[in-house]
Image 1 (spheres, helix red, strand yellow):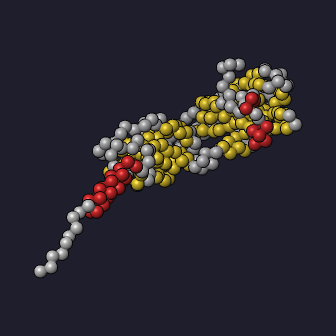
Image 2: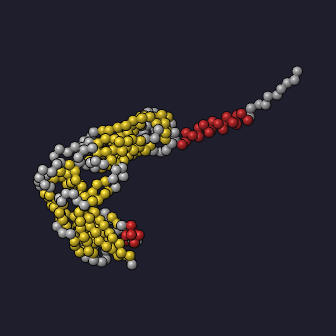
Image 3: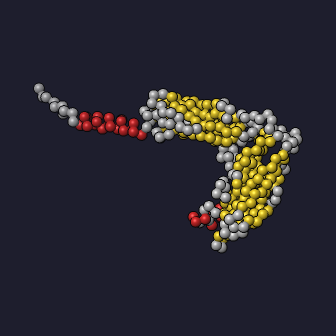
Length: 283
């Protein structure tokens, strides 16, 4: 139980009904996500673990949905399954307080299925009561299923952005990237300045791409020490070390540098006010 890795997806009503004392209590599921590689015509069996971390018996219903993601935000969209490939060993169970149960499921891929990624979610649903409020609670395991074969990991940049003028401590950049292949894969975004006093790049930011969808990814570039014009190169690399980059020049003005013209102006004003007065001499 202590090793259970879980996520709790709660409806708005349940969030309102959940107090600080019960933040980590409720319906839980493990694993959070599963990466499955399988050949067409084959099947395999996996399992999820459902846990009841409440003080009352819990009736749980289980279901499978297909999911996709919205462009740019990558918010999950759920729909009835188009492919009847995931079969749960049971659709309901009852859990006593503090208990958990292992629920097997089978993934069966028809022969002749084209290679590529397909994405499913196993939902566990129940109702929890807090005082006089009853709330619907849902937990989920995400299945990233890859049909083996000719997997294409390709992408294209729809749009990129990095401000040409920056005053901040970090230089943020974004890229709208479309997965143009037939499967999901990770990309690692990073950026770098080139020029006087440029600093090393920060750690790469990791993002997952799903086929057919556009995702806004990004990161930040370490600012230089001195003001000036710098060349910025930013982009991402894929898992097979292919790189996609964009570059242009930026003008960096750190906040402290703004005090220099102000100080020079103040010194000039003081000198001007203290200059000797010119007296006219009559002949």
